[in-house]
Length: 354
Image (tube, rainbow, N blue to C red; front, side, top):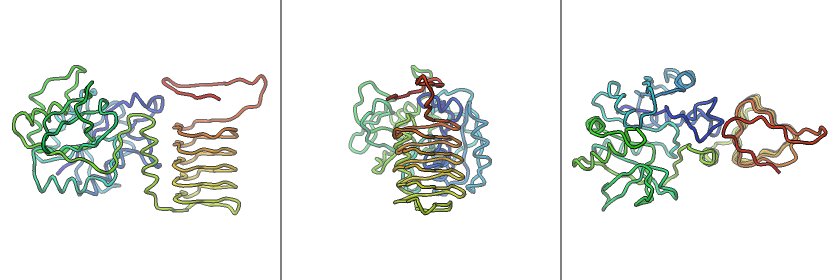
């Protein structure tokens, strides 16, 4: 089998972070989301991966390279516009040829990887295998309706869902999917929908096998999804201290402290990760927090948050929680008079003030 990872989305719901960074490269537990997908395919024995890229192609190329760090070969496939998942399949046909393949959305994290799912597909050999998960908000996803263990219908973001089974961003297909994609028409939003292509397979008697995921899965559509995925991945950490922790500090539970990081007169309570070269001084880093490389946090408390590379958080009187802080951000408290909030915010920012 070959692998196809889709990394062309704009990430509009994650702005302003995605104004300057591809959403697939936003780190979860200090690792870009996209890397989890590449690792999952490699662990399943897949060594040839096509990476569909769009506007952020240059940034993704720089981060991923030729794939050699994962012992895979990466081929870049350029999609001129976000014309749908089925369109991404269609333009990838020269790379995929007639081989069966797994398609993985690059902004998804699936605990446990895909190795067993790939083995199941290779053993049973259906024309398609779709992964499903029960969700509380199915109207935001592609939704499947099953009938006695068989797929009856698939609808993309239905107003009135007939089930709570959402399509997880992992699919497996044989070459029949190319026939299906050529037969469907663009949806009302102008995209070739993968749900329509799979429905075509169902309607024409092809074998579409459903697999309901029992573990957790997350797509990175919203900031709260990123924070939840961060929490999930941090909880899998193996504790490791490669930086320095002074005698006045405490490190509790699952904590990773990367090389050259310094913990000074502070408490780091895991699950948490402190990136390379970061300095934590006179502070509390609470559970489910990722601090990227080169950050400085002083006289602060922060928990259940993601702080990206190079940011500084200094001298705050209130604990930061449930926050996503971008690269090279500075958050400080000023004592100048007259006292006032001084803000410089990007598009679609959200700020809660006390």
